[in-house]
Image (tube, rainbow, N blue to C red; front, top):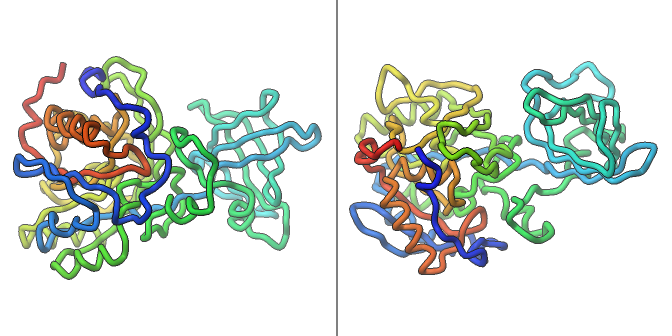
Length: 366
């Protein structure tokens, strides 16, 4: 499908630079049953059917931005961790222990294999470049009293998205992390989940809803612009995800009681649709692997019935996913309404709740 289909006018001042004063005070646009309703996240439980299965992404954002100096020359260097290298496991036998990562990196002069970057108690060694153009680096602690995780925590910064034009604050340590984060590995937050609180999850449970989780480590590709004119020509980034047996069982129970599966965020959609059981529509298979799924209009959704999501970038793969879920014209009309009513966009912005439409499959693929 032509990328131009997902274009809309977004005034730059609507790009949220700070989170809402409280998580539940973010605005919520509800688009379902042919209606558009303006509400707040604190009222979310009123729009989720009783006994629904609500699926969250429990990935935890790591401190991925490292500012340091090159050993020897003292030249400034910046490393942005993208993901652990699938072709290079941790050096468990090494002393000190090291982890191999793929990363973006820049310095005053070109980085070469063998370059060592010092950032407080953390050492970053450049091994070279991977076929995808990212640097291969090894991380280790320079302090025998600190584990590698401790050294990374001390040396690196919270990786706020590039469209947030300010320095990281102490508040970001808490607010750029979901309240249910437990599995370290993301370099960007699953932003729809940032709105939820434990009291809100409890209110959902009081209405008979079941809360379950998957893991998808959000990668740098979430910010990757689409440069192709047609989405079919866009090279989708890989993201590691896990759908545990407990979640597969929870989805089976939801199907048995006729309850919808509600995805909190596009990352949950990507995980569940990637894990869809090809032999049983509506079910998933437990798995732990990478996905490069690109969801656009024409995709037949097999698992997810409702979606809570933030407002996304024009001409992005995430907007294409949302359009596939609820219909391109319906979604773009909702986005125009959001701009008119001054909703806040992107990671720290407001959210919308969508019901899946079955009409999207007839949209033209031109």
